[in-house]
Structures are given as structure tokens and as C-alpha cells.
Image (cartoon, rainbow, N blue to C red):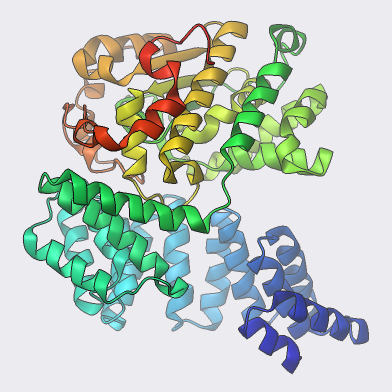
Length: 530
């Protein structure tokens, strides 16, 4: 056990696993060894295995608080936020003064709409631990989400007083999109960057956040060259941390286009769960999807939620369970019988029910990446509405390059990868338009800016909803918004984001090449994607 603990502390996971399995062969009921083996599983992303091990440890020792706390973390990592919060209630009942547990509970509550309780927890934590910069940052995040921008800025600034080199707070300020950095801010960030030397992997997170924030700062000052240099440096660090394959995404799109023909959809007509409740807004990040969501969520019949992870999770689980490889969800979906398609649709409705806080008949899932899983949605939830939010490829793609995402957008850290991703998205959407005409309503961002009322009326009409003036006054809606556009949609429609790529055109050739004919054809679809 000592050898296993030392191996864990040094991140020698194979050695730790071997030692722990040896111990469990001697005593299969050693709950400490079971918990440590779960930690090994969690560190390599095998959260299902970690959950099973921790559940077993708690069967053997119901009072094992460390195992229960670990289980809450595993639930959180699997996007099962309600279960995480419930488990943390039990953990905090035994250990009420543990700030790490309270912080995780507040984060989980924020993901299921429990904003008031989360804010109360953060208020208490920042009172007790005022020198913890990351606590102030988390507090600022939740204040931003509920629209208290001035308070969120104050919280971020308090965090910087505690830890001036914490790059993520600087990026959090930049990510508000509505403040301008002044010369003293740039100087403070440059000083922090110098104090965070390259080559130290432990400080890479601070460096990449500082680079992205400095990109925004120099952009504010109209200095394109240093702005792009910092954006490129931040993207390079993040790309080096990820294992993204543009070819894999393209291959998945190819397989979906080949598999999901008009005949296949016709043969499965009437399959899936018949609920009409979900409204999916998909496309690329930074394409105006949050604006469309805010407009719809201002209607009396539509509830806004957030970017929900459930569709990709269900599709990938299907591939893993049916084919032994999550990436083969396309083939697994083609072979799924009617009963399974209905079960998958019902499972989505069950999993997302926690996000619904009102009795409104429709609710929005605006995870942009759902475009790749559109055939899955069409087969398991055939009566759900699909809205494609599309923006000019250069504005959209360069906006992604300037945006550091907390997670889930691995394609966005290289210009060629972003362009390829956008092209694949247009290819698959064009295929669905051809084999399932009329099933997707497209909102072209620039058209929405030019004539908001006409576009909103057309959107509501397609959804079968009456026009309401509140949809044009969406910026007065006080609902919580979790995305990078949260502060932008609290303002009236404007053209501030149009043509922001132009000062950077000298560096965008890799993006233009990857986009190919999609760029010149926009907003139409090219006859050929070669």
C-alpha cells in the first residue's frame, strides 16, 4: 500500500495499479485499496470503472467519507451534476468545514440551475478564505452567469489581488467581451507572463490563459500583430495538450453521410421517442447560437437551459457498448432496433429533466457540437425541432481561434483544423437537407442582424409559435446564460462582431485553404466540397 501511494503521488499509474491489484488479490475487501484503484481509473478517464469501485467500497464501508467524496467527483466528471450535488450533501454532513467539497457542490449546482444556493456557498467560502484567488474566480463565474456583471468583475479583481499571476482570472475578464483592457492591465499581464516561464508544464495553464487575455488586450488597443502573436501562442499551448484529429471528425462525417440515406430514414419513420419538447440549436460555437437561444427563451412557451452534453454522451456510449468503440456510434445506430431508439430518446428526456425549471412546453439544448450527431437526434427524437445557427465562416472561425474554451472544443486551436471542422459541418448539414428536407431551420447570423423581426417571425412560425414582442427585447431577459456570449446577449442586436477577422487577414491563409469552396459559396452551399 505504501508503494501504491508513492506511485500515485508520482503519477506512476501502471505501478500503482499493479501494486493495488496485488493487494486486492490478498484482501478483496480492503476499501482503502479499492478507493485508490478508483483514483487510478479516474486519472486515465475510466470514470465508469471508478464509479463501480467506489460504489463497492461504500457497500463495504458506508461511512468511508473519502470514497464518497471521490464518488461525487466522478459523478461531476461524467456530467451527472445532480447526483454529484446530492452525494456532496452527505459528504458535507460529515465534514461541513471542508472548502473543497463546498466548492465542488457550488460548481455542480451551477450546472443544474441551482444558482442562488451556489452563490450563497461562494459568498461563505470567499469570506472564510479571502486569499484564495480560484474561489473568487469561481464566484465571479456564477455571478456572470446570472447577469451580475459588475459584481463578477469585482470578484475577478479581488481574485487578482490575491493571485496576480492566475492567468485564468485575466482570461475570465477578457471573456466577458464587454470590457476593454487598459495599458496598466496589459503591463500586469505581461509581467505575470514573464514570471511564468515557458517549459514548466505545471504553469502552462497560466501561460495559455495569459496569452489569450493579452490577445484580447492588444486587440482592444487596435494592435493586430501582437494580438495575433499572443492568440497563436495560447492556441499552440492548448493544441499541444490535446489529441485532436481533424481527419477523425471528417471520417465520422463521411460515415454518417454514407449511412444515413433517405431510404434509411423512411424505413425508420415513427421510431424513437415521440416527444416534441426539445429544441436543438446547433452549428459551430461563436456562430450566434446563444443569441438565437436568448430570443427563443424570451418566448412564453420556450425554456432556455444551457449546452447539454447528453446527446454526444448517449451516442458515444451506444458505440462503445454495441461495437466496443465509441467512434463507431454511426454503425451502432444503423443497427439499433426500434425499441432501442425509443429507449435512447426517453433516456435523453430523463437525463435532461433536471434542467427544466418551469412548466413551459419546449426547452432548448444549444450544444453546438450536436451537428455531428444530427442523424442520432433525428432517429431517437424524431419530433424534436432542429435549428442551425450559421455565421460567415471567417468571422465564425476566427472568433473560435480567439476563444479559449474551458473544455470540449478541441478543434478550435488551429486555423486549419477550425476550417476543416466548419467545412465538415456544412457537408453533413447539406446531406441532411437533401435526405430530410424541411427538418432543419437555418438562421443566417448576418440576416438576423439585418432584419431581426423578419427572421424572428420566420423562426417562430417554423416552430409553430405565435410571435411575441418579448423575443425582440431578448436583452431584457434576466435568465442565466452560461456561454462565452453571456454578456453580449444582454445587449440589443448589434454588428460589433461583423468583420472582426479583417485586421488579421494576413495570417488567415491556412483557414481559407481549409474552408475551400465553403468560403466563396457562403451563405449558400457549394455544389462540390472538393
